[in-house]
Image 1 (tube, rainbow, N blue to C red):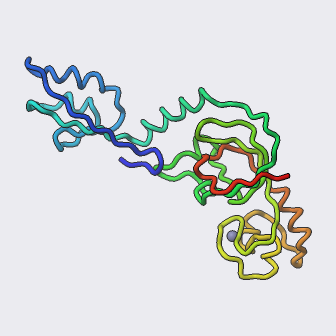
Image 2: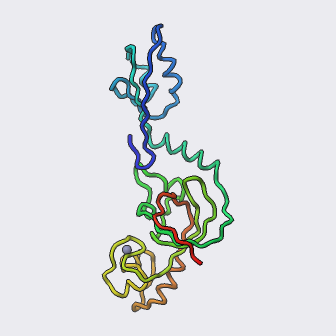
Image 3: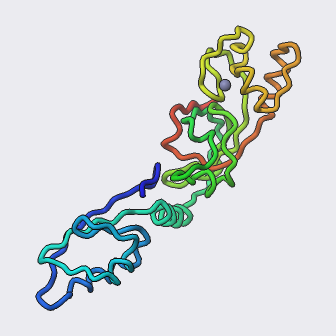
Length: 214
Ligand SMILES: [Zn+2]
């Protein structure tokens, strides 16, 4: 099975020992593996399925371990939990993130479910402070804002409406955010955008731009 971010594939070759099925000992070592396993091109759902099969081994055995998304994600989550560092940095940062940070969890990409209760970021461009971080993620308290731009801060599409370009959000995304657009009152829309809040974990490699605010 292949996952979006956490997929992995591991290959190893082993030589069987002289005594009968001594190579089983090696398989025992990896029997905690949760994913599928492939031996000499034949795929088994698990190590257990392989051990209970009547498979006989040649001198050289080629084993491929298929990482299930579950297997690798759990390992990653555990190691991330152990190394969360609180941040003393009170600087406000304006960040731009990749689109997947604004989308709910999907098959093969369960980050949003595991770390943010499946509450994705409402906008791709937001501003705020870093509360804590790990090697690969950062936890931020963010809010929205309006700025003059030609692309939407939520979906990244080009803004065709000249009024929308004053605060940087298209009409569809504006209504998704629950913002009432009363007769194109730009200042009022900007105030409402600042009240759009989100706190949660962001994958560091999902941040494409980061600007320090003075
Ligand atoms: Zn948009």
